[in-house]
Image (cartoon, rainbow, N blue to C red; front, side, top):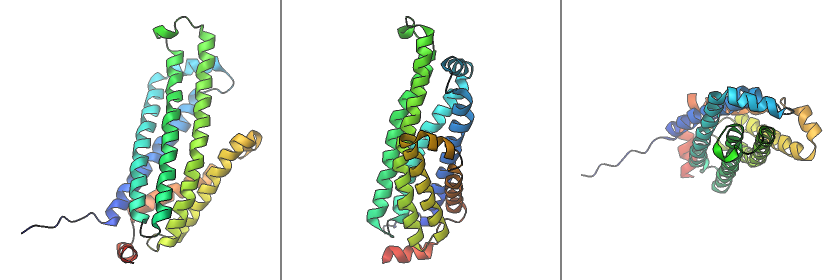
Length: 240
């Protein structure tokens, strides 16, 4: 007699997704607040270079944690697609692809991020380049990483809008979470387009614009981890 393999429940998938999402929030916050904000001095290439050399281990830890965060986000995209496909397969697929596009852009931008450490080091290929020039290039590399991050968040903003729509319509997750995620998506888009179109406005609204973003994503991750989804409602939606 052949035994049928029992598939993991949607609640199990939701809790895995919530745990991964919490790591993403923690790793991203650590890299931005405790690494880049502490080490990069936007108006002083020399000070930035000294900080990178003096705190190389911290820089490497933040960078590595963010790389793992990208891998986790790919898994989150797949899990959210599986969870929300019964609501609307097309929109769920759109949300997953937008999230993956964000990850690809940020992964490419990470090359510039790590290049800054190469430039301030004493490796042989750069030994002939004057230190001042290498330091200026390192600061430029970090600024280019910031540009790449802002571009990636455009895709992530649209992913959050689609996710908010799916959660609000799901019936097995709170509508309030859907509304919060929709607001977060709007905040991501507003911040990124202000960054490129009106830098003065972007400077005025940052970092306050990320408060609703943080609350929305943290609430969603905690709900998935602690409560999961309403399995009977999910099953009914899947059958329908």
